[in-house]
Amino acid sequence: MSWLDKVTTPPAILFNSTHNLEPLLTKDNGNDSKLVLWKKHRSQLRQDWLKILGPLPQAPSDGFKLRTVSEEHLSTFSRTLVRYAAEPGRFVNAYILRPAGDIHTVRPGVVAFHPTNKESIKVVAGTGGRPDQHLALPLVEHGFVVICPENFINEKTTWNEAVAAARIRHPDSTGMATMLADGMRSVDVLSTFPGVDPTRIGAIGHSLGAKQVLYLMAFDARVAAGVFSEGGIGLNFSNWDANWYLGPQTKSVKFKHDHHELLGLIAPRPLLIFGGETGRAADGDRTWPYITAANHVYQLYGEPTRLGFINHHEGHTFPPPMADKAIEWLDTYLHSN
Image (cartoon, rainbow, N blue to C red; front, side, top):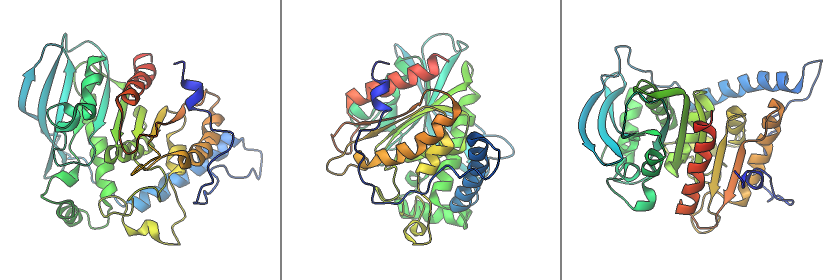
């Protein structure tokens, strides 16, 4: 990609972050290499964040009970609405989009998360919403098998009702714990489809969906590459304190964590971040300090830095030219592997 160097290089003068970020690399008190020290610290950070999230809902022990609700065959791809068990007693809806042709042709897969909206998975699968929201369509046209799972907040009439139902099931867990577990289930389901290469799974999402990409990549190493659009990397960039995400704990003065740590957990896998800067935008130049902090970790792995950021200055949107770059990013790191 001709633009790769540009998106992985921070500006000469970084935006002054309003949030003090704890260093990701600990000081060497012995003979361990920096990478060995990081891996020890990484393990502790992972446990810290799992404690913040609360217990993750577990997959059903008796299988996903996947069933087809409806199916349509178009000229270049098929689109199937499925329903499966994400946890015991709870089922979710998802669209599966597959390129036309031999179903056993080995292809990479992508989880495409939907943004906050009443039409849920329809907007990414191309059966509702605006054309610029149909993230799954260009992906399937580029040869990916795509799953578009429904977020749990769309399972009830209101988001608060959905959160209340989740708390009955999991009283000690955050909403983000359910989103993460659901994302992991979608990878499970996608990986079982004929012709999907389980070593080449990606994730993409805008706004609400971007938040799911961040957590899924941080805690599920099966996701090999991702695209995060306008989710708000900093905890103070967006409504991470909402009950369907992490809750009010993030506003406590005792809360010392931030999402540069999750970027560190993702390293060295490729992640492209988009910010809109103006209006209601969640990400912008203030995102760079988080990327710079995580880049110190990426560099330890001895590979080219694959954590990129593009500020398109068009607000809380995912403009078509940026969607094109997202496809190129996923093409590069999933089709070429």
